[in-house]
Length: 116
Image (cartoon, rainbow, N blue to C red):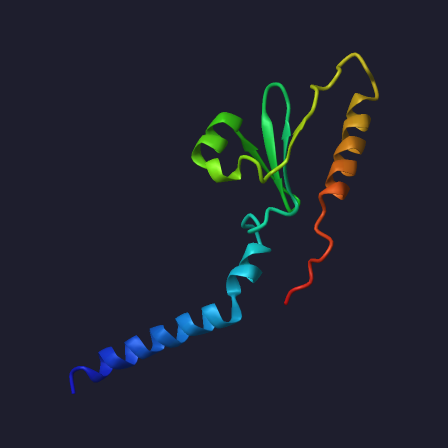
């Protein structure tokens, strides 16, 4: 009779694990802040002084050397876009940079975001 609680607990854990793998919640979780498995919608903007990882409209400041040293499998999967620094002498530099970022974001946007 002492083992009934342990058996019930093990059964509940098994059911939860089965549901997670059966309905593949990892796909649904991947769309909410974790990098996609196939890295669609992810890109890196590399400026001379810093770099930014863009993942589904969330921007992370990263160090390029450490990022690829810690994640060597991502080296050829995430596109790296070289960008020049802002030209402070040009009054329209910010506006042009925002326009270029919009074009890049549209290019790498995920088209099929429907949940399965």
